[in-house]
View (cartoon, rainbow, N blue to C red):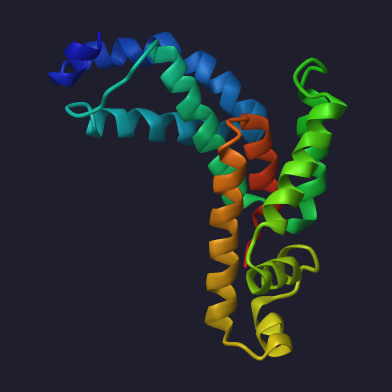
Length: 189
């Protein structure tokens, strides 16, 4: 089917959509909790595939690729749209829906250790800025005033810290840890 899609075969593309949209929808809805966001994410995935059809390389089963894309875009959506006020509610709701075999206390403990280790490995000034921003929830402006640095420096330090932490966490190749980290470290400014 993919070779046909690469050649621009619309019917093959429609077949791909018809075969997999339902399973993708279930995966996305479990994360986003809204039908409209679920539909938007599915649409975004398939638009991306169609636009990149001539160059896209999918290794392994197509459904695995589609579910990975669904999961990643859903998590990115949550990261970009979650507010401080509903963070704990969303996190609690999500963890209650995960079957116990997928989320054990040991995994949660490992998550906390991984996050703490990643934070500890940050350069000292970056760690200080990051903790003020993410743990104490101070606005960038207040951090800048407190540390006598420019607000743009604060923004850059937090951005770089997040990149380093995510890189460290993702190197563990544990999607659950990445999910929690994205939730924990997202902050609407």
